[in-house]
Length: 447
Ligand SMILES: Cc1ncc(COP(=O)(O)O)c(C=O)c1O
Image (cartoon, rainbow, N blue to C red):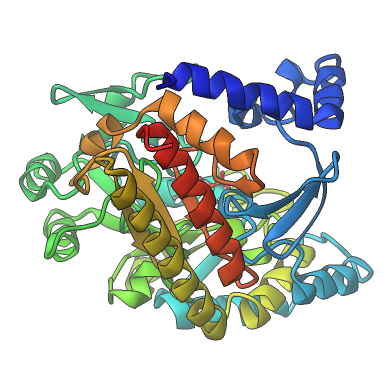
């Protein structure tokens, strides 16, 4: 039986052979792009160089070598709407002709904020261009409001490039997450870290009385999936209230649960909701909203003279284009009906992967949250970030991704995540099921 290294080498040779045009562009890119890519994460694609895209529509794209792919990465959720949805395109065309950015509000801001209130419950919204910024600004305002210095996050969380969140726990000690580039200070100074689902740890850390805000995804989606155990969300809410910390729920990925994300699907009561990525179909846009009570506490606490230099907002934030596009995308693309199609498609994907794992007899499992699904290289669902992180296997992951890529399937290059868009079809999923089955049968030596 071939080793994983041999299988990977075979797939890499196949990838290089079948992507001559992408290879040529990647070689040329080294002359003018740092390490050959326009954004550093793109180094992570398996195969030695990234596929260069010619065009994308719906759940598919075609690369510069003319190869057609089913896209389950969907821009790592930025294109959860499917690529270039028609209502989004129409709004881009119409608004771009009428002005892109003015530093003045447009009426769309009212519609979008009312719609976000209807979906997520919190009622005082601000806009940003990225989910990272929505989280950064929320943290700043939480500190300003409470007068407390620290943020509490869960181990192996991801909330964008927010300095305070790049902290992990090792043997109970907080330190910089591995690979964190140039941390401004040791995050132990800014951050408390607890394992997800650890109610006692949460109580212990909050009891210090110095936490301004707990920032979390309602279920972790960035280290494999980790679901809250029954009662954990209630305990989180009760403990943050008891100890005077705000609760910020980051719905950037968990919008996969439905139009109002996990918050609406499970009746959460956050003080702050943050969201970005797909809400404008991939046009940069993000939002953060405060509950009525939190907004009332904040009211009047920001000096008029300093509103533009206080550390929140940005020149292009809330621009007219992104608001018009958010309006069209929320009204016509990320609708209730769309989720009613996407979620069963994700169930089909999960069933296909489950069947492949069972047939190959591998000690893996697959999880699903709304229209997002993911397989992990461990037999049991992880209870927390540390367990999920320990189940990672970079070599295996890269092989699975490259095997799929060589057969016209794109998975998110970070862990084994797949996302369904309103345009994803049963046939797209069945193609993945076949390719996944072939990959795991080969790995387990059945082929
Ligand atoms: C939960 C969550 N929040 C925030 C972000 C940051 O998004 P962006 O990179 O668009 O700022 C991410 C990115 O993966 C995320 O997964």
